[in-house]
Amino acid sequence: MSGLPILTLLTLLPLVGAAIAIFSGKHARGVALLTSLASLGLALSVWFQIPANGSMGLVERLAWAPSLGIEYHLGVDGLGALMLVLTAIVTLMAADASIRVHHSPNLYFALILVLEAGLFGSFTALNFFHWFLFWEIALIPAFFLIKLWGGPKRGPAATQFFVYTMAGSAFLLISFLAVFLSTGSMDFGHLSLLASTGELEPMITAHLGPVSLWLAIGVLVGFAVKVPLVPFHTWLPDAYAEAPTPVTMLLTGAMSKMGVYGLLRIALPIFGPQIAQIRTPLLVLAVITVVMGAWAAVAQQDLKRVFAYSSVNHLGYCLVAIFALAVPVTSAAQQASQAAALNGVILQMFNHGITAAALFWFISILQFRTGGLRGIDDFGGLRKPAPILAGLMGIALFSSLGLPGLNGFVGEFLIFRGVFPLAWQAATVSILGLLVTAAVILTVIQKVFAGPLPERYATFNDLHASEQLALAPVIALMFLLGLVPQLIVDSVNPTVVNLLTHWRF
Image (cartoon, rainbow, N blue to C red; front, top):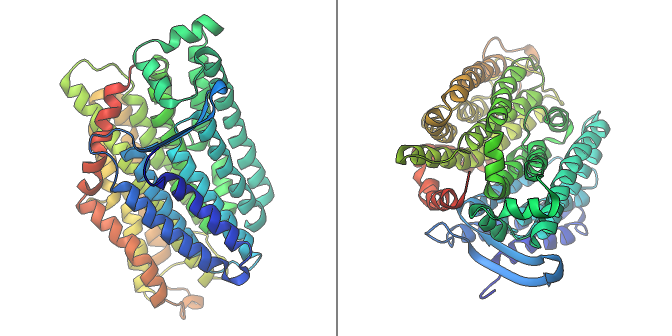
């Protein structure tokens, strides 16, 4: 390790902010906002320092417990750095949206910052032991935020969330303990190298027998719960619906990306050949996730549940692309398709995080102005008294729909551009998800903002100047990344090329 340990500082900063917030009483939100803003500044600094060749940069490496294969090993490439920026943005959005937290605000905002630290650690750690610590650290504050500040059914929702994610973590732990026993290493880079040269599977077989496929399935289950992939998704609608809306913003905007990130950083590099063996059933599950998520959203009456299932649908596209590219390359055209699909996945992760968090923020605003109402049939005609709210939320809704010119379009386009040549059947069926999502979004717009205005909303307040100011950068980002996606693609593509070069299927 040389120079300033910026990744360590980035992870420690929210923890320091949490320690200050816990003793700050009513000023805790201000502490959280300042800490989140500083974290965003540091995350952007990391983004501008990633290596241009797509390799790991800003590496920090210290011996911890060498005999156990444990070391303090941090580093980021374009994928990791982008997830740091996403986490920082969504946390800042969630802290800003938490203006109406009156019950133990110091503890609430301290937990928000601890959650941010757990996310930062998960996106920078390159040793399983170190990474697993932060993976679990992120789970604990999320559980308590749902349990203590959630809705009427927060108890069962929090318990279900905890049980599912802990079960997934157990599968991950068991699989990597088996890998460690076989290789003596927990370092992602070293294990990826062994996998790319074909040495890993024989080492596992020599020590434990032909269990590599089962270890891969265990790792996949651990990440499938977090994304989530059908049928491991049933915890998500209740957790999203019962969590305080700013916490839902964090769950969908950042925490769900931990699962997709884990597939790209850990599962495919280390267990690529095994994933390729079960590619077809994985693609079937991913397509079901896309289509089922969209159709389930149609059936919901609660706006939070509508967009909870919509999140399942949108992340399903990432899963379709990830499993589609798990195939040996036989031509330059196929290699280009893999690169397009993987670029699309990374863009989709970022863009969905921003857009989904913004949509739940708008739902929070609607709830506050209507005394907690969020049923899709509870509104109507709000465009007349609140044209600014209707306009800005409409932009976020069309971004979620994938309208060209907004950020939601680019990732989905690249995913389908890459997946069609690799798995045309999966891509074709997944298009149904796009069509049904359009129907869902247009229905929300019609029922919330169009039609006759109920008399009780005659004095409905439009967005205040402070709310407009807070939301403006998020809306601007949707346009910016929709019109100039190369701001991300140019920095991420070298990482994509580097990853695909070293993966073996």
